[in-house]
Amino acid sequence: MKKLLSLYIVGILVLSGVGAVVITNGKTNDMKIKIESIAISKPVIKDEGQYVTVSFEEATASLSDSGKPMLPILTKVFTFPFNTQISSVDVSFSDTKELSLSKEVKPTEGQIPLDMTMGNDLIKNLTTYESAELYPATGYSYTVGAGLDGKEHVIYLAVQFHPIR
Image 1 (cartoon, helix red, strand yellow):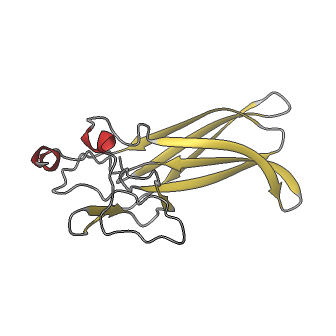
Image 2: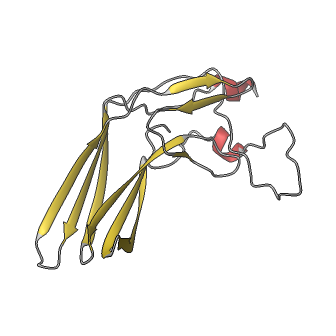
């Protein structure tokens, strides 16, 4: 257990911002590049007794894999004309920093049936907590879908940024 506490958690703290690049291929076979920068504030680390929690002002949600560290994420949704084909998505983080924490990051609680109560003990995924690998493994993920924006058919690109790992 002391080994776990002595290990530090690598935090990639984005102080300057996040850059997202999307390359699209429209119906006229012309390539377009969309570049957007997103500024993210300094992380807030809060002592919660046995664990710490990490957040930042712009966070839209937290990673929710049961038993794994509860880390904040930022989701940005981009909208494109319906015939757009997204060729690639590239995200780059500027000005990263490594931070050592005195306690582990609080694990995410699992799902509980409505008729049951949860005990005070959180169950953590030891494989993740004892691993030397970063969690999550990548700094971003994305999904592409189609839908309606008002009365127009559009392509949605939802990018989830994981600035703290």
